[in-house]
Image 1: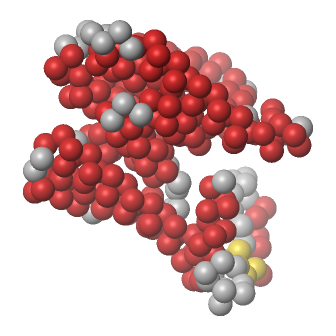
Image 2: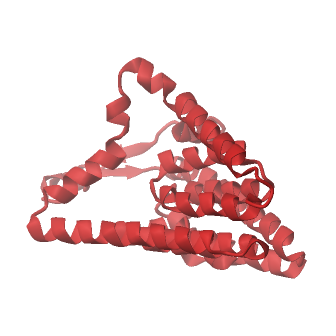
Length: 273
């Protein structure tokens, strides 16, 4: 689905007839130990057709940040400041406009989840959360916080179970929608390689690396439970504020599992808030 979105944008670049050129003088680099070296230079048109969608998503995240901050603070100045901080953050610019990392989509979906939960649209929030998790696994670490928010906000009204069931139905429905073509093709397990492949890499890189990786996983899991516990202990009148701070806490701990600069895009909107 992400590639289909990219393809939609690329169809507008009809003048791009060449995506890359083989540079014969660079062919020896493909024999180096580092497998990612290629003697291919992409064209400017191809680069633009990939970067334009990412920039569009950056602006969508800025708009969601503005909308959420307006709802939380009622201040146009603070809302605009939040959007500007996102758009002019060097990490955001580099990851979208230079490296073309699609982690910005995780930030987009997580902001949508928060906005929908605040508006009590639990069914839609569950659908969007599933999309975020299947795209990048880090949003899964906010699950206990999100459940805690629904519990804290609605425990006085007696509708907690109904809202959680609604969210769960939305999550299951989105899994079916997204994975039905893959299941019918018999490629379901292959589609989970983004998780299983990482685990295989960690367990085949030596005992020291393996132990370190599992320790970092433990840190991420502990952070998930701590953030969830803090959310459950939050007072109802502080639920909205606690939601933001604990989502940020859980995502920060999740970063220990794989410390790469592009992953922080998922938590950056909540840091800005």
